[in-house]
Image (cartoon, rainbow, N blue to C red; front, side, top):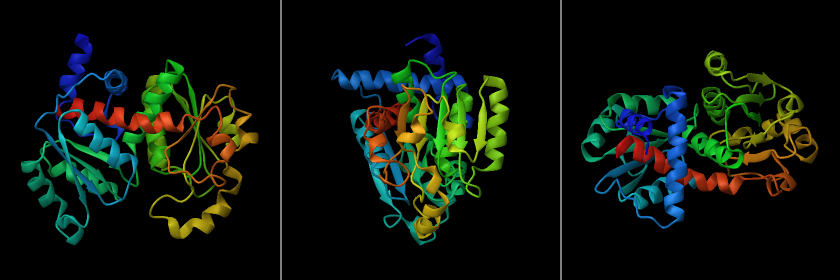
Length: 318
């Protein structure tokens, strides 16, 4: 590891991971590089356990496949232990203030990951905890997913800066984090959402300010065709995320023209990558021919949740 990487490692120790805008371009790239290195070690069967004796508390208000498995397996592979805590297992589900929970859990644990609804739950937990807090997902942001996403793009394309990412769909937490991470890394990000479902305007404005420093280009449009034109990466998400299931029929109508299909992807570069954070609904936001086609990297992307999460855990807790 170079002196620069070692310095970044020391700088990140004890930090919270709430959203990518809290980190510099160099720090985000370091996390991606570390994820690639930890993936190499794991594939080669190298034992690397810098978290021996450490414990991560995993608080889940929202259920999950990839988040739970990646963090739990990641802690095990790094020599530590992960503790699964659903809202029914702890007093948070019965009205205990987050400030109390944070202070108590900080005396037991070396780190806390929370997957929740309200973003204020993450920020409040981080405010009162004295150990690193990781945002496993909130309604506003999904930085852990995007760290794995951009690791995947980096592995496939050999670079990040200057690439164009087109996100088609709901202007949700995925759109926000892809935009923030892309702006930080000098990538061009185009978001296409139906009217009324655009990303948060304050986050768009913040990303455009970041973009001025990194040479990125941030575009929000209601035209999937405009967004996808000459894209290196096409990304989509379900039309009704967890918590919005009651809007499914309404959203199906609003998003009918925002399906990623064989006709739309013709506008991207021939070697585009198709990405999806999963779970996916084939025939809704994306056709089977695209998501299961030769340009799809959804399972490489899903695998990289493990390696990206391990990089976070090492950087913040080792």
